[in-house]
Image (cartoon, rainbow, N blue to C red):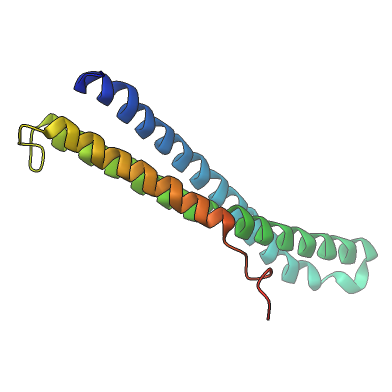
Length: 146
């Protein structure tokens, strides 16, 4: 049998750390890719003004267009913004449950507080895992028959 202190330290804190780290990582990658996409897309019209003078500028414009398309596709495929927000939400929900339990605040002000904590935390984790699995199995708009 695991003690409440061990559960908080080994399960909840571990999961808060994991979700926090994944949220930060997804946020950073989303912002980096979006920034690169914006800069590349903004550069195309600028270079277009010089395209008639140089074939290499035409090639650069084409390459930037491909770059923008690849980044947009990656952002759609990887769903970094969605995962960043979902992971942050789960981390914050776990923190809330932990602090309500540690302060013995409703609903954790009763005799069966530890069992309630475990049920609620595991339900949060199960829901997050189920949501993630559903997002991985959901066909993309391109895969749907017309």
